Length: 315
Figure 1: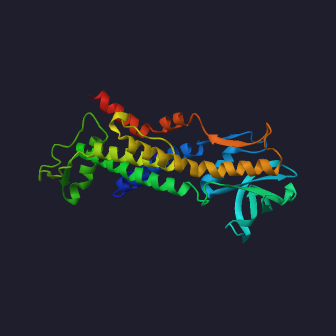
Figure 2: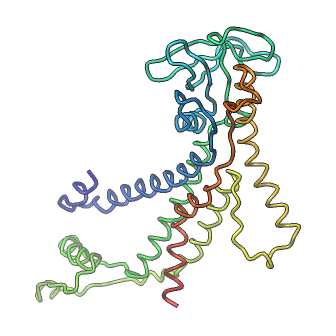
């Protein structure tokens, strides 16, 4: 679809249309990079084969909550969760609508020592204590990175064409075609020698300062703030440059953010094990921070790293 749009006959609005497409592509690219990290943070241990950790994390990412339950037909499963019933004294719903594709069951919220049958209760898994999805905040980070990236692209482009061409309507299309060859890095540009015989080309120097380096530094701050939001260490400064108090404060913030996601998941595991008699057994489920998360982060950090490497290569 994108290729079809870009290869059509150029019109007055084609450059604007292309910019809109690139804006969307850039946003989606950053959003998917950050989403991969967010969805890869936690490793669910000993989940029954009938459960799916990927779907569980996606429910938490997009909806802020999910449900663990036992179904007579499917066995142990995890589903999406919607509030129902009335609100109890702790601000939680007394009933949960457990639903998924071609599945819908109304269950009582698990409460310790109620001893309801397994087919009547469910365990509520919270993304955080507020039951707020991760997706909305990450979308904001993706928008900020997109705005910064596109500003850098435009600034770099301005170094190549730091002029404003002035012409009349009769020459506009001709100049557009000439510029298209220039913009496409054509090694030779051909033109009619009588083309501009009547009137020379007037131009205005736009004097665009090169600020792409500053923009990339700003993007790195956004990326690190995104990692802090998820509770992932991101200090890239040399340790000797950091005051101990500053480093400890940053580490504490990162740890608290990480715990805000981990503790509710741990609580759900405890309730599940208690409900189904798995506490202290080899089949007890658990969740932990993924040990190879660092590799996932470095893979998706290339937006910054590749640029820095090119700067080193260029001296």
